[in-house]
Image 1: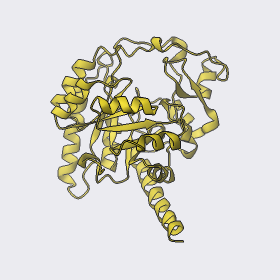
Image 2: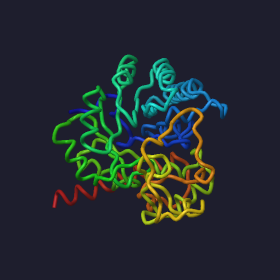
Image 3: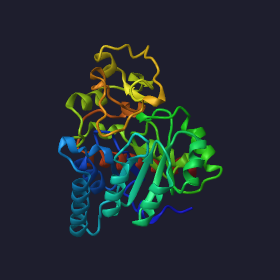
Length: 324
């Protein structure tokens, strides 16, 4: 099945994943101008911090429109907004209305699949991609009207599954031939090509973009991404109630033992407007296992340039192997 037009003609087959707190208009615009889909969680536009989802969408839409008018031969990629579809998200209905108003082209849904969210996206001409961690959730998402799936496999940053990408993609492709993205430790061009070889259409990349100049992360967080690798990641449910991957050094710095963390009840999940982390958790930083490929903090466009060059090299190498 061919990809929907909105996902075709990207510079490289990559969607920048929505990073909680970290993704902002600066990062999204830079990603889109560089030729990949940029995205952000709607909840990142927090009014108590002086931000407005309506203002963010106005800025992103207008700036990308200006770029496209000035660069008709190299237009920007489309952008996406992530909606946390969890009962604790009291903003959901209002945020859906704002995204519908601005005709957001790609809607990414997480932590619940709901028909009305897909309907709202389709009504304004958008498509929906739902992130899942297993085949059962994948079936539910498509049954409720999602257009595509994001397979969040072992090694992904933030809320991540525990299944091997090889197993997860294989099971989904037995019955689903629509848009399929893969998330999990993808941080270089060779991994992007590997995702496609497994059966995914696009790679879903998050952690490398934390270590970019545009990202809304403190300098220590960005440098920790650049300085560490897979062995420095711990998988825990403690901090949100959902299993996810985090940087061990940030946990240790908060006075906890990263190798002996208790589990949390999923009922502790809270995505309400006034949610606050316990004081000792405010600097617990999420990250995927692929960060060993990231060696420095750099502009997002420069990171995309590197990924594009690596991807081209990987394809050339694979052609030689295939041709014998």
